Amino acid sequence: MLVRVQTGILTPDDYAQLALAMTVFSFGQVAVFGGVNQAITRLYSLASSRGELTAYRQCLRKRYAHACGVWGAAVCALAAALSASGRPEWAGLLLAVPPYSVLNGRLSALMALGNGARARRLVTVHQVADAVLKIGLVCLVAHLAVVSVALLFVAYGVATALVLASMAFWLDPVQPASKSARDNDEIDAVFGRFSGPIFIWSPFVWGALVADRWALQAFEGAYVVGLYAVAAQMTLGPVRIGMSAVLRYLAPRLFDGLQAGDRAAGTSVGQAMALILLLTGLGWVMAFLFHSAIFQILVAPEYAAASVYLPWLVLAAGLSAAVELVTLKVLGSMDTAALVRPRVATASLGILLVFLGAWHFGVSGVIAAQIAHSGLFLAWTCIRIANQGSCRT
Image (cartoon, rainbow, N blue to C red; front, side, top):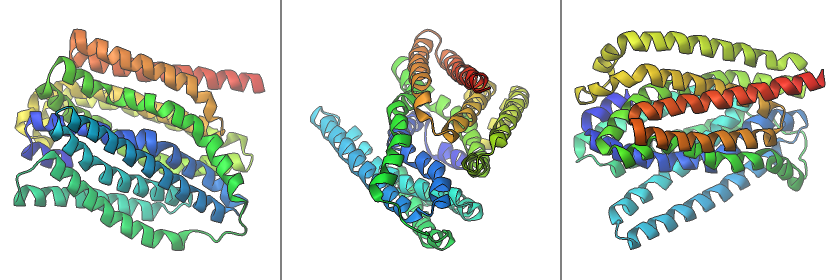
């Protein structure tokens, strides 16, 4: 719905500007807050089983505050550099991103905490509220003012702030009481060992996620970026929402099972991955047959030319979802360092392939590179897990 509203009020060139600005926002969510949020979800069962939730909460608050400070300082420095180089319009747009990014990062942390505590209904209600408020505020902005990308980020930020206030109010009562508090330095060390490797690989993963839009901007121009970004949101967006639901259900069960010593806890991950791949195949067929009709219903007519990308982006999105499930299994083992080499190597190769694809083949080359990148990482990680299982056997 948000895509339908925004394509109705933004031209493809303006949508390209929004897509590029969102790459800055996604750096905060992936590289700055991603490691903290994954640690929150994974370590909740450990802290709960040991009665250490008080120290756990204090640690995550400290790490979130530290991440906000680093992120805010980095964005301000970059905005100052852009302004000094004669690009004040880009500097102004860049400064509109951090408030929304910081608020969204905090909301994501609370949702990760609620997910770990099995407060799924609370998390789901607030995710729905976040989406509805964003749509409503974007429509209000479009009605009252001349729409700009900076104003859209203001609308996103206001919506997130309202949901964050509600989430913070309701979340504490559903948390079990802490039996005892571990020394803060010790629990902080556990956070560091788990999230440290994630902070190493996450900038490379972010680069692979956003390389498509910057490569197309460099070789094809803003109009093509706008069309492509809409098609990508129609595929990657719903898949990520679906994966969020799957992981919200699966992650706490997996982590609790592993914490209890259940060796069969990881079986559900393999079953879920098989289902994801099956649904990806079915989605590819449906998108191939009905991509034009889908765009007629869900996207403004000006973007109809991008419908041909839909089937192949469904394939890329499905492989990306399977990668997240495999990653979840590795995170469950607490061996995040095992993912550094495959994540960094395949992400670096993916970035290179995306730019080469955009240079020689345009959008088709970019999509092919994304499929190759996700498929390569999936194969590498599955082989590694299989080899580790054989060694244990």
